[in-house]
Image (tube, rainbow, N blue to C red; front, side):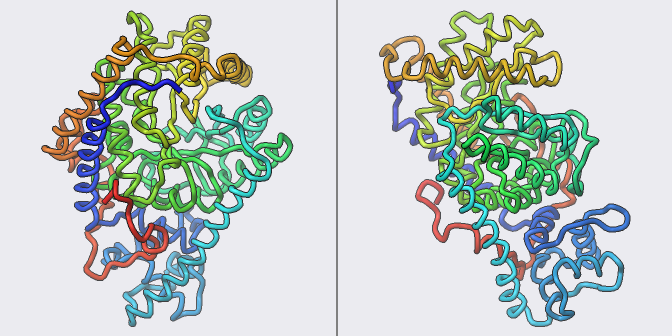
Length: 520
């Protein structure tokens, strides 16, 4: 395909700044754990279910450990030591704690407890590795659609209705089904349990709901002869727990940004930075593609003026992802077609931004979002806007294509709206299939000049962020023009200083033994 003339040394300098920014945050946060990291760890050891008051048992055990002033040592070895001492499973330990018949304590033999904990953790790692291998085998056997993959949402609030809509969407041509979460779930400091039917604006992310949708998509995929990917939302106060549940049930993608919760949900910075590392580590091990949230910046900031903040955030997200073990093809770095349609040459600027991102991240699974901010409810103009978005996506070789709805700004899409969106995208992708290899960008032209300007602004802002620190930059409203502080937001009480003997078995089992050069 045609390439823009970009300064590779400038890209390298920007990436080096992003690497140092991410590493500084990682080093600072490594001294902490969180309540939800410990709950996710317990889920990975096999604890699930709820007590008689519908409180999830991972919450019950972690609250118990906090009350005993033990959580800073790590939940895993304490629970495993109790399993051995009382000849119980992890689930039975949790149930006994819930009933008040067992009080947890530090292991009598710390070394033996660590060894036993690693054995228990390896059982779940084997299951997750098996799920990853099964996905790969299914794709090898059935195949999957070429990129850009058509990504479609379902959001009825009822998992059983979601299944019906997801099946229909796959049969109409969708390659990825994303189950939107119920409004406000990201602010719940627990994961709801079981199959749910009462979500608002979406369906609760629960392990049972994951299981039901995975089974439905496997079935319709067998019928259609192609693998259908499943997406959910690994963000909010329970980010690591949702990652654990998704890995167990073989989800394929997770919306999993390093800063989205801070900026758009006012979740505490420390809590988010710690949680995003653990959740991404689990996703990396499970072979899950993460989707980042830079597209959201352009719903509050101007897409032309703030284009460089999108690229800067993508570079930071990339470096956080490397630190968690993710490979480039697991990085669904986000951006969006959000320039005001009244802006002269706006289509050229959209092309410049999309092509710039494609060249800076040549191996990433880029996630491209449709127009939303400037959709007015005029369905005819909306269909034109979505068509232009579809053109940019195929010409610049995007990977994950979120279908634009002509009824955006009116209502949650109906099945017929999704059908029209799929038909629009398939028509454009088919009729322009090889256009990108037939055209060239004019050297020194408007598109190339615009991309070079954005890249230069990106290098500059990353150098500024490196000098002041990421927390200070967020405090200044650098991203999305929203300001947050290190001690503000929800969830700070769930951040725990690790004791000297803190132990969690999963990083040593899930992380690569050596970091790549670009993350070191």
